[in-house]
Amino acid sequence: MIVTAFFLAGVFPVSPADAAMVRVKDIVDYEGVRDNQLVGYGLVVGLNGTGDRLTNTIFTRETLISMLNRLGVNIRDREVQLQTHDVAAVMVTATLPPFSHGGGRIDVTVSAAGDARDLTGGTLLVTPLQAADGEVYAVAQGSLVTNAVSAGGAGASLTQNVPTSGHIANGAVVEREVPVNLGATRVIHLSLRNSNFTTANRIATAINRSIGRGMARVDDPRTIAIDLSGREAAETLYRIGDLTIEPDTMAKVIVDEASGTIVMGDNVRISTVAIAQGNLTIQVTEAPVASQPGPFSNGTTAILARTQIAASTDSSHRLGILREGPTLSTLVSGMNALGMGPRDMISILQAIKADGALQADLEVR
Image: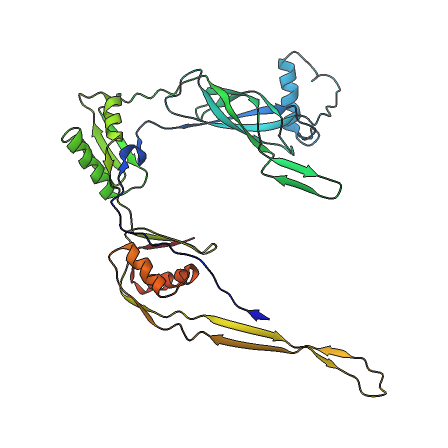
């Protein structure tokens, strides 16, 4: 038996190309323009015997009794043992986008809160959705879809996806608006999603050059302040959003050891280093031997284990020079020329970083 390890993968060099220009609105967020998280508690009915067991989930039973009382069915004062398995208590979540108006619709996600096995085919009853301030901003109701498939027999069962969580497209009606007044203050701030001084300065320069001199200033690596004095806020932000710049990126290498994935930024550089990488092959051979008893003896034939182990290294892997290059393409080509696979590169990159020759941040996941 031969025990050896090898990896076959490709590393694709990036060829030089024109600078990638992106729109400002694709890399920044506008101050005061934000989503709001909503949550609610409700009941799903119409399940095919896959709901909560009311003897175990007390909150489901109490919620069902309270709902029936509100609908004029009073069973709280009667000795009635509810046995239905077609009801489930659920948590309902949604995201209220900015500039949503009353009467608009948003999607909701429904997740089981008790011991329900499957919410497929259920109907969510009217559920108020509240924000962090305790106010109701939307009301959800409708038939939910789980995208789950379940099948089973007497001896085995199969379930794909998660049957205890589903969604309702346009399942909630917006009841209350979250006011967003872009012109309330004289200065509005743009927030970079990836903080970078160079990118922030390029945005400010583009705004000052194209829209108004002295209009934008950089407060910190993430924030650009925009002076809206004497300008209409919506139109100005629309013009700013369509401006294009070349964002700056940090020199960074992301390594995922589990999958052998390496991602390098365009600014990654390696100083000239010498690298030697050898492969170890271990050969294990099992050669059992039969041991026969002596003539006219009462012994029995026995099998004796005999194992031979040999280890060897591939002498074809010699010391190589990885020279400093001006581009990521040069770096990748140099590593490929040394005949290294991705997993070999991971170990080598870690060693190069420890040596101080990797001029980038190395993040191992």
